[in-house]
Image (cartoon, rainbow, N blue to C red):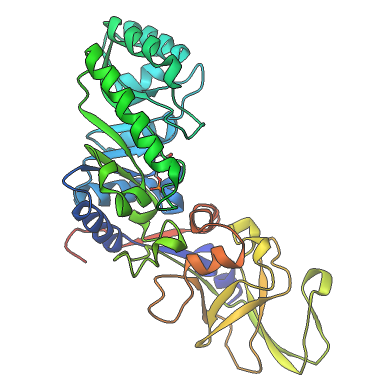
Length: 384
Ligand SMILES: *Cc1c(COP(=O)(O)O)cnc(C)c1O
């Protein structure tokens, strides 16, 4: 038993249902007005494992794969993921040449990036595929409208690059009706119009993320970039639950109960004694903590299905473990504790944990740590 509880594969695991991911991709494609779909697999596919998720998304018809950093995209190529791929978060001195040689579309938001990609293309003796990013109002990455003419003209004048895409990103797509949405779409139209009049003939124009894919058909253009919805999570509570959106959560996080024991009334539980037992009761030890990405902010609130009932984290969530009050129930060590999953077996969802930690479900799944093994199931197309 000791050996087993020390085996990380037994302690806890994040099961990743690739059949659910494929079904979500198909659902999103059906809602995309005929646009192509980019599977966004940055940050290790929001914690789900980038390579198997990229492969599954391709099986379900994702034409494009998208990552934030070039290193993420290069790792996918090294793992054998082929076809259209794009990355957008560049810093000076980045691996431009490697990306060009790996046939990865690179995003360019300003003149410094255009200079670096042009030099790298010349060195590689290949034409770089670049996508110009417009800041239509997000105020993060992207080229300001005032700087757009210079960037567009310089890109057109550089024989080392070809502009394959024009794109942008929305600030408030998760708040339907927010006035910034229409404003951004109108700025995008103007910036597209300028570039196309100047002579750019993009393969793809794109601005929609998951919430825009689900709620804003006029934002679909040639391509939608879906991340969170592909993992079966609602982009925002206001848009409905995953189930209401026809999506199925892909990750199920569970652990093996490490210990259960009887304690008397008045017993403090975990650091700081923020929980004190009211009666004589039983406690269960869940061997997951904030080192594994379980938010400490959910101390006293995070829900867990164990022994057939949803219990609440009693007291502080520690680095490696936390405790639930089993209220006198007997739960054997080794019993399964499910922190979140699709929700149809009575277990909580990542959205429930987001509420318990005052954050968004994106953060819950993405931060599940490297110490938790990912177990990919339904890998083969046709299994779901
Ligand atoms: C992360 C990201 C997306 C995907 O966003 P979701 O809301 O998860 O669909 C799309 N585009 C860009 C630029 C991103 O950084």
